[in-house]
Length: 149
Image 1 (cartoon, rainbow, N blue to C red):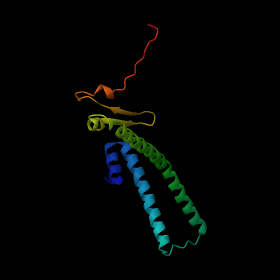
Image 2: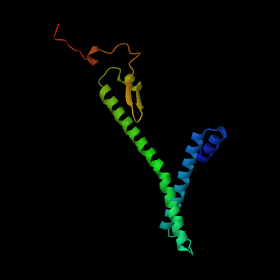
Image 3: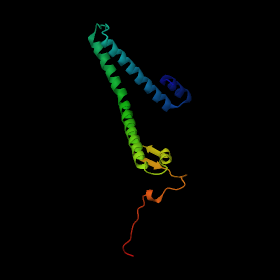
Image 4: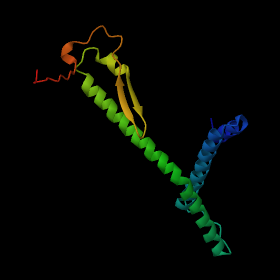
């Protein structure tokens, strides 16, 4: 759904998270469409509007730059968060593939692996329920021996 429609839906339902998120996305889209248009016009050497007052032109350019920077701060944070999550999930899938390939029923185990990512807590859960039996040689058993018997 386009961002402006989603913003309207969020406003109609009173869901302020939908509304603000969609409005933010609409703002980002608008700014970058305007920036792309400006760059294409510069590249194709279209005649630009001549301002009688160059101070006004500079003020408008500074304002547009400031708005673009302000809009990009949260977008940069979101990008970094999504990048970290993507890297973790790729590493987790590689780990699961490399570690489980030697096991019998590896496809079942891979299919039922659950990867959870949160900035403060990440986990990989492998569910072996439903398997008839996993041979003992594939278990990782830690035994503690007490020498003082």
